[in-house]
Image (cartoon, rainbow, N blue to C red; front, side):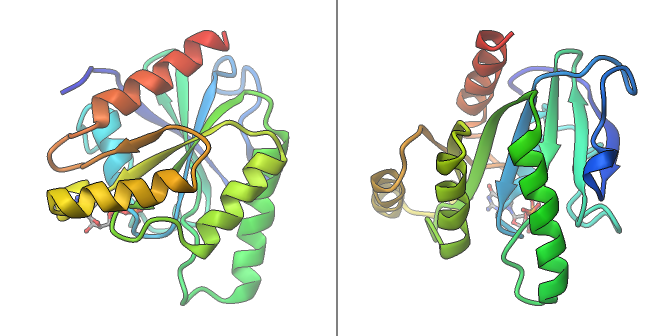
Length: 199
Ligand code: GDP
């Protein structure tokens, strides 16, 4: 285990006016946003980052998946779980609503310090991920990349997969595995440093 900080669910937002405001749930904290395609391993990674406690981050929780979910990590940081994108079965009208919600958060949230884009290490950058990356770069939002499910690749595949991801990435890349915990400490340290340098 990398650390022991309590992860506590704070609130869900379906609309921008439901994003937490100062003093509503305590002072506004620096926020780290997690983004990725559905099934990329976001909930599993959030659980691993929070010290392996399966308390809060459950992707299947009914009603929470289309919302932006805020979790306080210890006393100093908020993890923000954004809805997974790219799920083919979702009607277009709904994805447009999500997009508006996500864009509103990413554009306007002043205490957002860092975005973590999750990519499945086996698949690398896909169209929707590229759109997101381009959008973040255009709007000057800092991001890093976590390559998930690295344990599913052989050494050779890891080498090739990570090189392909790196070739398209401006920021740092963190290969991670939720079950083995590989890379979780390194990712956590980077997140923690970001928080400190922005305080
Ligand atoms: P989410 O939809 O992005 O929140 O994805 P989940 O965390 O629910 O994971 C989707 C599926 O991938 C589940 O069956 C997980 O057990 C599996 N999974 C997630 N992360 C990893 C990983 O690092 N390694 C392996 N082997 N499986 C993973």
